[in-house]
Image (cartoon, rainbow, N blue to C red; front, top):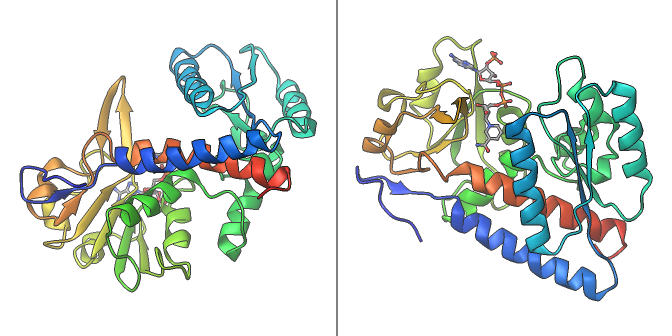
Amino acid sequence: MSSSSGSGARLLPGGPVAQRVLAEVAASVVALRAAGVTPALATVLVGDDDASAGYIRIKQRQADGLGFASPHVHLPASASQADLRAVLADLNADRGVHGVLVQHPIPVGLDYDRALAEVDPDKDVDGMHPVNMGRLALGLPGPLPCTPAGIEALLAFHQVPVAGREVVVLGRGATLGRPLAMLLAQKRPTANAAVTVVHTGVADWPRYTRRAEILVAAAGVPGIVRPEHVRPGAVVVGGGVRYEGRRLLPDVDESCARVAGAITPRVGGVGPTTVAMLFRNAVEAARRQSGLG
Ligand SMILES: NC(=O)c1ccc[n+]([C@@H]2O[C@H](COP(=O)([O-])OP(=O)(O)OC[C@H]3O[C@@H](n4cnc5c(N)ncnc54)[C@H](OP(=O)(O)O)[C@@H]3O)[C@@H](O)[C@H]2O)c1
């Protein structure tokens, strides 16, 4: 299941986690279709950014492969916020559409957070709608933010105990650090951790990361986590990345594998689990909305 990084640390790849989750999603899609419901994940692209169009195509292909219907709306770069709102209102009202994904980023001049807040929270497959963040904070059921949920699934899959252990999250961003901290502190067997969050307000953050049994990098600062920040034998999860063109620059310096007991690979760690969670949110949305969940 796990291999070595070549420096002693056990590798924690995300691919097998994603495969298992996607197999479960595919089985749920089959069951829904057998019950007369075709789960539909709608994608919305605004503008002509090549990378965004590429990401949408990949997600659509994956959706098709899993048996989802994948209606797509493409608005021109000249679209207004009101145009986008109208599209989202239509998708919200369409009972045949169970999930809605607005590809990020959208053109300058449009407000992504506003658009996200206009998606029906029950169709929010990113799990990032303010209502869903509130549900997460309150421990209520709802779609979970994909990257944090992917990290929890990754740790569970690789049988990394989390409950009762000291987790330190470097970064309190809305996409990753903050929701992950809430998730891993919840009272569930795969969470239930003692979670500390550090950020630029904690100048001496290495003091905290050095005592972490599980360290999650969520800063988006290439190479910020170095071996001297890692407790020997700790589990290190690299969530933060920055792209320079097509080059991926992770938060976790590769040399951390010398110190860590287990570590996510530079490529193919958290990323694949994030995408899998998107489809899990989509199929669960379809189940709930069709009364089969
Ligand atoms: N792998 C994936 O699939 C995936 C998916 C989603 C996001 N991500 C990545 O996750 C990262 C975090 O995204 P986000 O949107 O949650 O966060 P964000 O809004 O980019 O915030 C970054 C956080 O890191 C902290 N930080 C930055 N530089 C720091 C430093 N030098 N020392 C200490 N703390 C520092 C910031 O502290 P302050 O709050 O004090 O400014 C902030 O809390 C990004 O790199 C993003 O690309 C990865």
